[in-house]
Length: 141
Image (tube, one colour):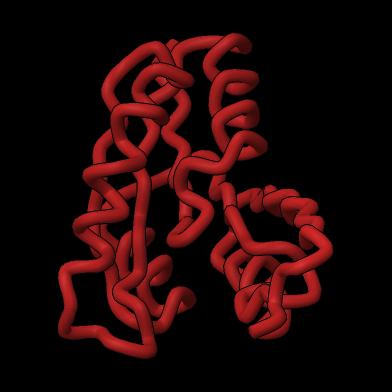
């Protein structure tokens, strides 16, 4: 039996606790090969932000997966980035890791359902929104 190939699509949530847990859970089921696809940011595609995201997230994903996770930078449009990646290689599953629903551009674009049209199962991992309490004097001044 060959390793399951899982494509992770993420940007700002590439090292979120929920994504790391999802990777660890899949790795615990059996042998997997993970690839992290980070689309270039649409707001500034000429920066190295996607490469920096890979550099920071890969060691944490490696630990969660128990093996090396490959990292690639894709097109600015996340749908097009996934499309191009799936044309080059076959994957058994795609995990879309997003920001919380109220601020996720990818959820508004219905990215997961659009990716399903390529005939690959898609899971969505939504990062938790952190709770922030302002101290009594915060924001004044």
